[in-house]
Image 1 (cartoon, one colour):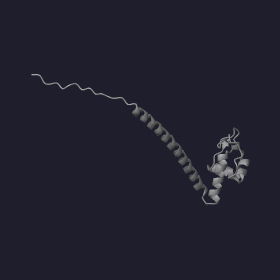
Image 2: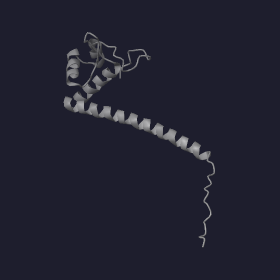
Image 3: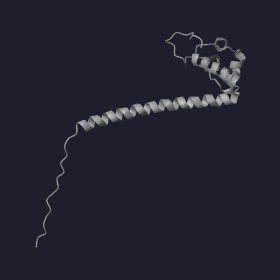
Image 4: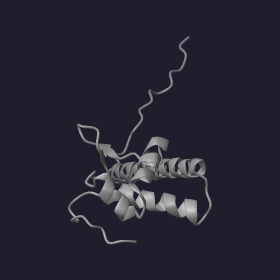
Length: 132
């Protein structure tokens, strides 16, 4: 993997590269990037004038598309499905992490409540004997 050519404070998903730079970083032709955009394999950001702007994450994805296509022989339709499934898995992992954190919080809250229990006395009136 190539060295990340942007400062560490710039997020991986910040659209900072014009198409020619992204193509060079990904090791492919700019026309290939345009085709992948049309096919929905990668979705670069857009300027107000409509120009494509690629993020470091997009460049890494382009490299993976190229690897799957050339080394593994996966079709572009297959690659698109793989990307969609990986995106779903990432979203589900994030949701699982959120739910696990919420569960931990609720367990801690329950334990705190359980440790500070108070006695509960139930009063029942005495049974009345029938009068004659």
